[in-house]
Length: 311
Ligand SMILES: Cc1cc2nc3c(=O)[nH]c(=O)nc-3n(C[C@H](O)[C@H](O)[C@H](O)COP(=O)(O)O)c2cc1C
Image (cartoon, rainbow, N blue to C red):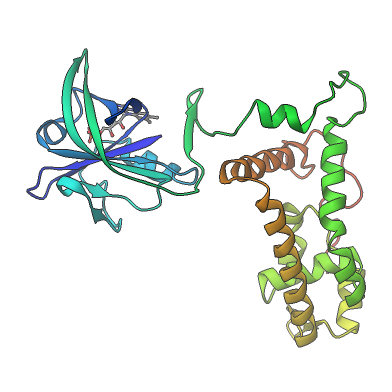
């Protein structure tokens, strides 16, 4: 997805969401995109010497929606820079091309703009794609995928492409790296959950804590909370609100640092697009298997079901 912008040099900025963007030539570097003749922005694009193409990042759906609607205030509240020919430059894009308008061709009910690229900037951000009428993220395929699973796996047998195996092993290996820290701090996994939930929310009422399964997938357990209060890691005030004590906060900070180091190691082996795709697919697996929602088709299991009792 792209947003193409231009300015008429007299204070009128225009910008449109476009997926007609394409490369044309490497030498000289040229790109094209097409604009509907009915677009209110056409007069400005037709007369401006330059335009800027923003390849949107995977998290810029809102910006794409904003520039897909006609209206005078598309740029309201956005911190703009200025590019060649005064074209407004939007922040946060995966890449930006600043182009001199080289040609305008008839394209039926569209005008085809061909630009010669004068400046090109790129970031490591994953691009926002559009596929099957919806926003999408793009990921590498082919070689990297076949390298990951060289041996063909018989369908419907338990093997190394079995999703349950992949998710389970990934969970074991990722959370397993936290185990030495938990052991040193003397925390059981469920105590870790209670500590993390209170550390994340700050001061929290038992009712709010009881509502956390939607976020964590874990069931609140009164026994663990009570045990942490007795060990001086959680404090309960007169109104019943729970918060971390000094010792609890120190443990929380140490665990968070360890978890972030693990996250960094996972991210090291993946590019931004793959990371965005991994997060997206894991969220879909969580939604599809969440017994707390109608989306969940799996039978609720111990530790995954909504709480049946609060504090
Ligand atoms: C996914 C998507 C892709 C689009 N691609 C184009 C395009 O390539 N060319 C175009 O003229 N309009 C395209 N549009 C529509 C324009 O963004 C929209 O008509 C434009 O913002 C109208 O603004 P204006 O009338 O202020 O110029 C697209 C919209 C969406 C949602």
